[in-house]
Length: 187
Image (tube, rainbow, N blue to C red; front, side):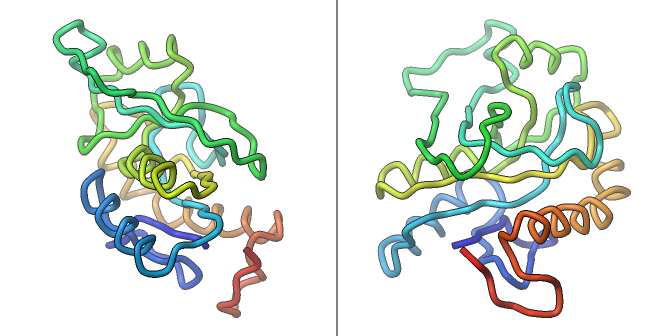
């Protein structure tokens, strides 16, 4: 099953789960309780901490939930804040950090790279957590729309349409979805 965030990031071949950690966790849990999928592929946009460029496609099986305050030593968590899926269908190029906030401090965000974290996406961590709870293989494929700096939102808006087109092209090239014009998915 292919899923996505929703709102302004929807696809005719993907089921929207909601934006952010909470909405996506609630909706994926609901889905799993009533119609548990065998496999989940999450697709969406991401911000780069600097390692990846705008329009790069990044595959991942790993996610973290690390807030900027953690990087400054202003917080801690008793929770497992890095999760990894055993899924082997996509490469695990980097860890995807998730938060309900979009990072805009490019200097502080460079520190994420010290933890092998390359991009951020608001939903992936909670989706990985829910999939783990229901023993479902999960992976993510992301397209970079912006860097995590003061222009993050403006760049996201400016690049979003082209980025989504590039993501769809990538999914077609990988035979994950059939070419545009049909709604049938291959997974």
